[in-house]
Amino acid sequence: MKIHTNRFARLAGVAILATSVAMSGCDLDELLEVTDPDTVNPGTLNDPATLPIQVTGAYSEFVAAYSGAGGDAFVSTTALMSDEFFSSGTFTTRTQTDRRNQFTPADGNTTDGTYVNMQQARFALGEAALAVAEFESTADPRYSEMKALEGFTLVALGEAYCSAVPISRIAEDGSFEYGSPQSSASVTQSGIALLDEAIGAGGGSLPAVVKGRALINVGQYAAAASAVASVPTSFTYFAAHSEEGDNNPIYSLQDNGRYSISEVEGGNGLPYRSDDDPRVPWFQDPDDPNGFDDAYPLYKSLRYTAFTSPLVVASGVEARLIEAEAALNAGNPGSMITILNALRADVVNLMSGLTGGVYTPDSGLGPLVDPGTDDARLDLVMKERAYWMHLTGHRLGDLRRLVANYGRSATEVYPTGAYHKGGQYSDDLVFPLDFDEANNPNFTHDVCNVDAAGFGS
Image 1: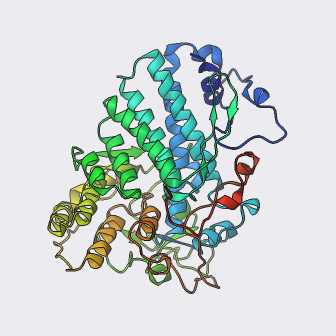
Image 2 (image 1 turned 180 degrees about the horizontal axis):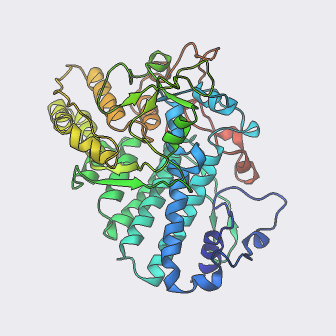
């Protein structure tokens, strides 16, 4: 197999962008050369004993993209673009994301690094899976884990970015293959194919939940419910964080006062603070009540209390919420209410599990009743999703689906009207792609419409 040069170079610390970013003016072969013997190199990685390094490195790339990278990761940027966070800092790029009025790609945006990191993680995870298959076998649990996380990167790219994401590759002979723009639906289906590989290799609950997430994004609700049916409600898969490496981005950005928990943001947002719901625990420090920008109050989440707090990527609670939404779409609201109430009845244990023991509620939740109309039922299941999965990278995708799949108008769903730092909320519904994607000869930024919620075909 001619995979070693690419895999070894990436995991040796060379910042190869396994995406549609060409290094303008640079020689790719030169970038692939590794000269640092203090990390790892092609010679040492020929040894199967180094497989744990490759797997750990790929996992770290995923964490950096999803919930690390010094703060501006998938989880935190989607929270800012949706109604979960408002900007209490001074960074103009973050304010523009919060206001849904992002800069042009040439001027740069908060999500640029997230896009690059997600594409790099996609590549690293695929190469790590190949290494596991080569040095061990596809029956090794690490193979299915790497394929599941690789599939997740595509689901995330299809969920939060415009419907024109190229998926570029490095071929086995070392040549760079530029991708063409793909619709969000197409990127998501590619992710589902990888998740099916993980499931076929015995992957269990992680790929099943991510597949369910992908399927509801593209409106395949019955298939989504089937995908997650065997997932235990107690299942959790976490992104791990550390003091020295990738910090928990929610804690980090609240610790330095940049992001604050919203309350009915832009008129359409949920009342995260005033509902006093045990799934959305928050506090305001009386000794430090304001954000980095002292003009704005700082409300912090108690789900994450340290740089090292774990952050859930996929869970059995999410599986049940997928089943509840599928039941609604199947015309069975009674089943939807039953599923939601079963979760609510066990909120103390489930919230402790979802936060890795960081937070355990001291109060429970009463049962829900059927609100009586399909619109109200949809509002209910989306609110339950928002509270159970608060600040875990799901809310922006749900807002997008309300427009793309359920026919709601953007002005009914996203924060709108007057913005707290002046002016008005704008029209952006998804993220643009990093400017470096312009180096891809198959791509131009004018095909990336951030005002459109649709997943395409």
